[in-house]
Image 1 (spheres, rainbow over the protein chains, first blue to last red):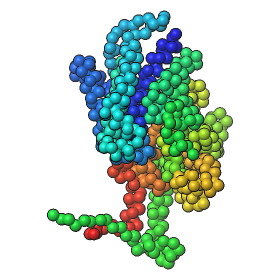
Image 2 (cartoon, each protein chain N blue to C red; image 1 turned 180 degrees about the vertical axis):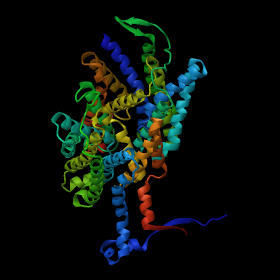
Image 3 (cartoon, rainbow over the protein chains, first blue to last red; image 1 turned 90 degrees about the horizontal axis):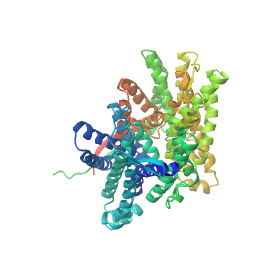
Image 4 (cartoon, rainbow over the protein chains, first blue to last red; image 1 turned 180 degrees about the horizontal axis):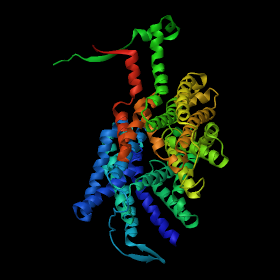
Length: 288
Length: 337
């Protein structure tokens, strides 16, 4: 029961981390290696607005999400758009941006255990003999709602359909009048907002530390690679696989191995089936 | 309104045209023109340790050379074989740990551990990367980025080779003089050897693997064999650099797998000029001393070179070396059309 409950919680938090990365890659084909930095920056903006400026919690969360979305869009519009289509430059560029943000924050004095966000609701309840606090419950519910919402958004709204069209075939999308650069910019903004949502849901459970930015990046890459780059559903299922695998290793082997599992998953997936569990495209292109 | 359009015209200098091929031997002037850049490189690198004002800055020059070897291996692998490896730290760490283990557990002296680390480390890296060789592009980049992290976590989790403390008390080189000139000499040898190698038949196959691997396959040449050979060459260089680093610091540990070793060589290559093989050295000569000067500001130096890297990728993606080469060999002028 322990494993089931905490495995689910862990999996949902992984899915939340990976969703933004999967979305950006799926639509604009930009591997956004600044994902971890966007995650952390949202946490810090919320913290600054809430603790230093003294705005209400909900308002500061909302503002932080807006800032994050704009930041993602700016990043695409002014930097990544210039290297679009050059895979390696994209990776190096976005990784360098992420590195600059994270190390800049570290230099700016955001380290140690002092920065925390409050949980949404105190207290806990028993679920089949396992204590679960309300915040984790919220996280699971909001995560699932978000996923459902995204599904509805991409299948039933004009904007969502346009994004999906671009993900499927950029040339054809251009031909029927979808502005691909604008859409890619929007996708980057949405990706950044999703990273921010993940940050706001997950960060109250611990401290805001810069190091977790790197871990989030690795976890989201793990989730997306195992699920197949660009496939959202794949990312979601992969999050459950990795999430449960992690909890199982923690229970039976030791907590040191939690990260090893994720890295192992990336390497093994890339070696055995580079297109991931649910990725359909790319298989022939990327493997000789 | 001025509607006349201009275009930039580039013409090879007369001396460049005359000194192409055997005719360079016709006059001293042309021979000097050809030899000057190489002479500046060799003489400059050999005199740098002497010019430096103290032990600290001499040490910095050694570190520059180590990073330059790593960046050279990245440049070779990325621009002559088409395998973009983001895992420079993997090579450094493997080489460093092998040198550390050989020296402290088997007490083998440094002048033997360094070549041994290069060969054994190259073999181990090639063996571990072998399953990933069919991957291309982003996928190879991601998987190589993960390897150093993976190795660090494995060492941490299993608590082997000193665990998080690392291996202490490793012998240093016999003197600072030997340390510096050994590394400088290795760097120069590597630069000229790789430059020579990429023009041989083997180098031609490497370039062909990058341009069109299916065509290489169709010619009856095994891609995997040549890719693993290239990885072995690059990994050996990286491992040798790691072994030297271990002996300089007299210590090896998990931070040998740190991201610094992956990102700085890439930044140096981009800034210096990708595909020129000398560019990485130029980039390292700029980046490493500046990052040493910024050491007091802590992690600000990482911000600095990450920003510089983005700037160069966006606005000057050819790099300094290509720019300089063009100025040396060509006239440029604006011309009406």
